[in-house]
Image (cartoon, rainbow, N blue to C red; front, side, top):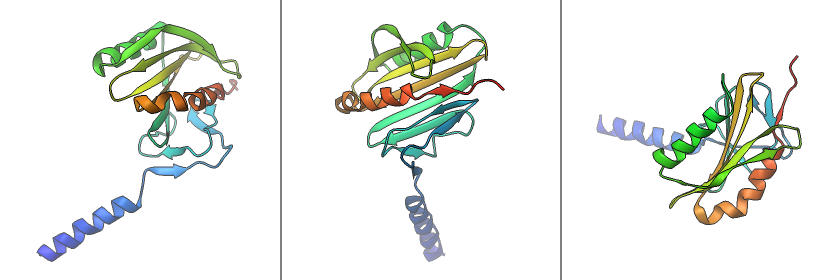
Length: 169
């Protein structure tokens, strides 16, 4: 019986190591997050299948860099989710916010607010687009280890710039 248990546990461990949550993304492929939101990942990033959810979240990574887009229903103005996210970073994760939120606009015409944050174990940037007419909020979070965040921020900003929202049918 002991040999059977060891074989079973060893088999599960080997299976877990062989089936990763990372899936390569072909260069130039546009990914759909959900609710008509699309973006183009930078080359060599991988899809994090364990953290992505069809129709609501897309998570990708490259080394220690993490980039997540969430699309959610929202009934209200743009301030609510932005204030809630700032509070989550400051109080919940004990991260410091860099300055005040600032406006941004993508090449596809989406507009929103963005702010940077940092702490002892991670640093990053948060972007938010609120489409009041569609009752929709798009939240983008990029983070990395503090010493690597600045180096990859340009790639994250380029991916945010590819964000687009399909026109309504």
